[in-house]
Length: 306
Image: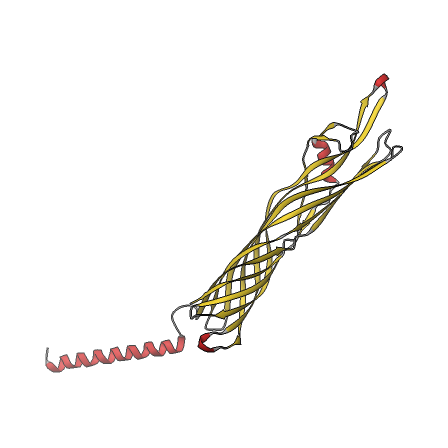
């Protein structure tokens, strides 16, 4: 190969290399970096959560017998959820187009109180009425998984990169819920027996019966909306404070009355068998548990920016 041919090849190769570099630079200027997003943020938070699952169930059962023309048992079961620790995490992606998406989850397990106000009456002379208070406990667990559209805005532009930014989130959420409650309610019964001389001996009394919402789990579709503030303390790190409201639709659950041997509360009947048929009759006379497991949370944590 001649010297001119070698020189031509070297010059041509150099021009091709320079042209490729220029085209790559221009492509980079026109289309941005090769990764899908311009900025990514990952946050981990802990704080206070409160379920809005407060509800009331009612129970009223009336019946009569030959000696007791009217006997009634009435329950008002009032429940409410307590505040508890809320944990969450989220990842946000800000695209060059200006669109920002966020995906994340939360976890809330809160204690539940189940206070029952029971009233018992019968009209056999001289008549009798009494009331009792029963206490029960339980817990509700809510795990929301969400996908949001994000709007970011500057609040304060400080020196040395210490900026304060605000974020607004809104989007759908999928809820994984469970509820467990162990409580008590009052039932009434009339027991017939043959007394001395073959005479009918009929007695009425009230009984404390265990009731429960069995370990119920369900999935629901809802939504969430939130607001957060970030203070950037270093180039990859920020402190964040956020509040969110999670909306979940209502769910109807039912009480289970537990059959078994029970003792009379007022001494008229020492002991009786609360049968499965009696349990079913009282269950039918009890309104369903209508629960709305929406919740809100206020949290603080850290955010890592890429």
